[in-house]
Amino acid sequence: MIQVKVKCPYCGQSLMTDEKKIDNHPSVKVSIKLKDKTGFLYLSSLYGSYKIITEFDLPMDAIVLFFCPHCNADLRGDRLCDKCNAPMVVFKSFTGGNIQICSRRGCKKHLVEFENLEDELLSFYKAYPLFFSNITKKEKE
Ligand SMILES: [Zn+2]
Ligand SMILES: [Zn+2]
View 1 (cartoon, rainbow, N blue to C red):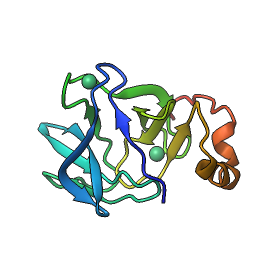
View 2 (cartoon, protein in one colour):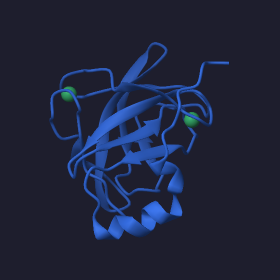
View 3 (cartoon, helix red, strand yellow):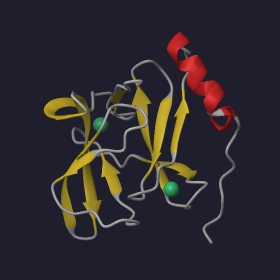
């Protein structure tokens, strides 16, 4: 499995934390908001793992707002998920490029845009040629 290491695209501080380990690796910590609830969300840093730890229950299909735990920037990007039309959330990868995930709980859409390809990622790219193509933004239905 590939471990991703991400930081905030706005303040540049690392989102990796040892506070909670998921899949035996440091997790990605973000602040989240769902309706009137706020708290921390920890995501597995292993690409392809969808394990999370949350401070409150996230119902399936809920769209969650993601914020940087350091600078509170809204991490929502300008793309919508091409599966479910929820906003994509953008993280900056330490290896260059962006990693985007769908903000809808339960949607497994991930998008990776690496600037520098590492050898171990090549097979991964071959398996997911979609990541090379441009995703056109869809209007909300
Ligand atoms: Zn930040
Ligand atoms: Zn989605």
